[in-house]
Image (cartoon, rainbow, N blue to C red; front, side, top):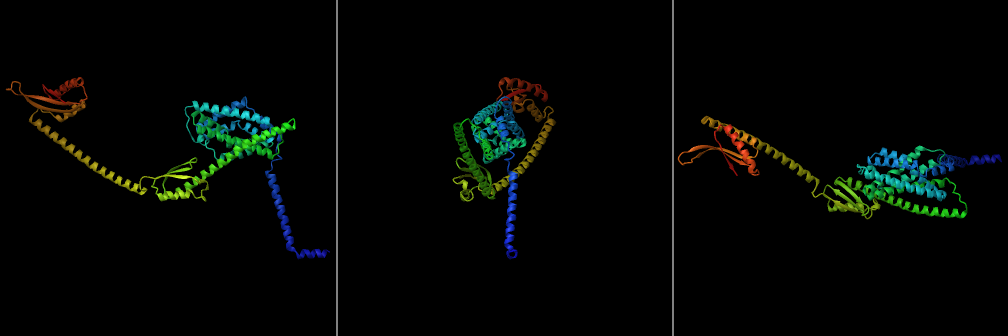
Length: 490
């Protein structure tokens, strides 16, 4: 018998090797499975009673909790106003908004209608108080303007949904563990950001900007619903005990109410997730179209672009001229179902430059620069000629005056007197001087010195008369004359 067994073993060594390999592989997989269970299973470390008591303890809203919320609202509002991320995070850490939201999720999981009522009332009170406090701050504070911290909380996308959901899961796993992991709770508070959306909604309310108000309130609603959903899922997975009622009929009635409310809340949450997910897909493909089809094309110079998801339009503003062929090509690329399936039905609104091309603009610019430089050279030459002429005129005037002095010692340098007269009396438009021959009896002829003055026509006679008397006295002194007549020209 032993010989037969030994013979069979020696005849089938391959089958024995395969059997041993399968046995070893099975043992290895079982080891990995055991390791993963020990690594990821957190049911044994769950404290049901302590978790329920801790969540219920954070639901009430009165006394110190109310003041903490008010202070957190003002801190968050200041941080949003100053566009300071650090201050906004500080407000998240001290905000008590998380308690009632976890209470709502727990009440659905445990069929506890009383906890649901308390959580809902307290959450509603917190929301109203937060909106009122932030409204007062932004309404009366003088330095309020849009910034990145505010604008980042008026248009929720798929990332906000995922952050709220996974943040809520992390928070509930931390809550159910024996002892409290404070760092995890703080991290979730920062990630889900319940307080800043409420303050942003208060900002929109104070400024009358309903788009900001409803957008921020919508983001807060998303965070609230998906944190509550995460709480519900974790408690159900950990098989927390259902709330006990006095009789089966009451338990069944409350279970029905909780189910109806839960379904009513989850339906909008599902639609919200789908809508936000679809919007995110559309935005991603629009950005991909802009980068892949336009920015990568060296023949297209895009200035800016905009989108209107409601009208399904993409507006493109180009620096260069866009031909009809180029426009048709861009529309065909946009309607490519393989590359951009979510952009079906979208239209392009294209605006190109009125010039023929960028090269024409560059050429015209260079030509104008050359013309400008040539004009500058001509102007410089003319200015030099003017300066030379002025020097020549000055020299001639000096010669004429010198000749007059040589002939008649009483003749003075009229050019100097004319300049001084203009400095003293700025309203003089023109001045002249001459010796006039005059005869009263038509026999004897006298030589009379006469100055001719033309004043600014805007001056009234009441101002001109005293100025003329002063001018005559000054001219007589400068010219060394005993008498001088002034004649006014119009």
